[in-house]
Length: 95
Image (cartoon, rainbow, N blue to C red; front, side, top):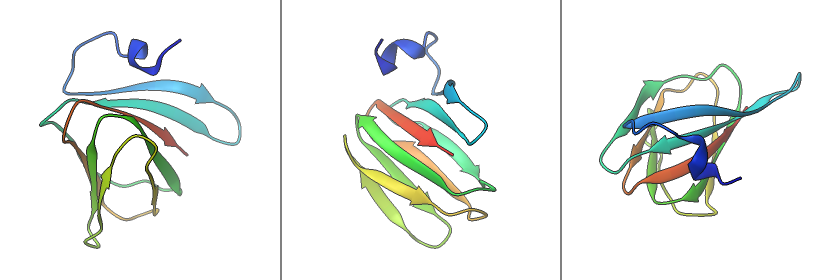
């Protein structure tokens, strides 16, 4: 399987469960160019990995990280953050 095949509908932002266990889960995210995953919080630490494309991660602490394939960012709990698609992007979120 290919991560791009998980997103069967064309949506500005798409999230599809990839893996779930008692210890945590992984979600496949697709953010299209010019679109944005709106501001939100996570209650637990998370890891965001860019698989394809180019995305911009930002948080309320002023951190800005441009993510290219293979890049990742640790997401702090209870810190507002958002992600923009600079190009059509495929990402994996692990919690």
